[in-house]
Image (cartoon, rainbow, N blue to C red; front, top):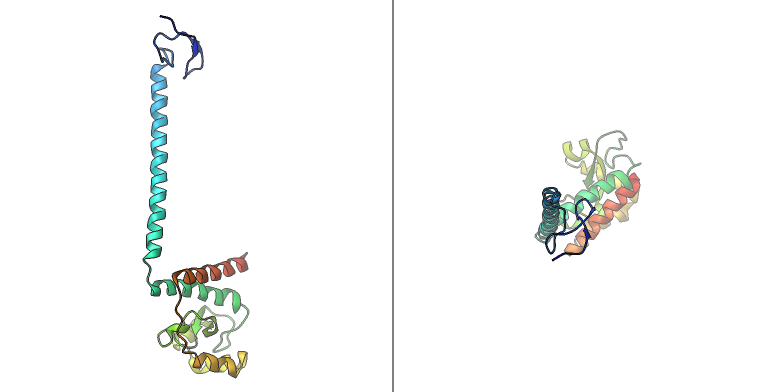
Amino acid sequence: MTFKRTRCAHCKGKFQPERQNQKVHVECIDAYMEEQKAKEEREAAKKARMAAKVERAETRRRKEASKTVGQRRTEVQVELNRWVVHVRDVDLPCISCGCTHARWNAGHYRSRGSAVHLSIEPTNVHKQCVRCNLELHGNLIEYRKGLLARYGVEYVEAIEADERARHYTPEEFTAMKLDYRAKVKEMRG
């Protein structure tokens, strides 16, 4: 029985098949098999990479879903601090001592420990030098004087009287974090 002439799947040359479904010359079989094996290995590696990518995305989603309110608040706090120091108050001196050349922190007028509801409130956070914030524990008397000079009595009294509890959803925490991050990124260009 003779078969229709066909092209070799490996070298693309024409040949007369000796068996039904023969795809390659007899001389090309070894090279064709190596090529097919390499192709299968590449496909298996690609599937493994895709499975790992899906697994990483799932792990990321599970980690995000299992975060506590405190962890989410801390993430927002980091971005808020960066925004205060590098964008909002970038050209302003230390709120407490007035120095202009120092290492900077974002200092809280009402501390995060005593007023956790104000920890991610931008009105309570201002650029402060490391010395005032850490060594002088906030330098609160001078901080208050700086707030009065910069914003006025109503602003300071509003912060001091604010006891309203703030309850945020995970989506709101994420939105705040991304908003502050985008503002910093926009400023840095």
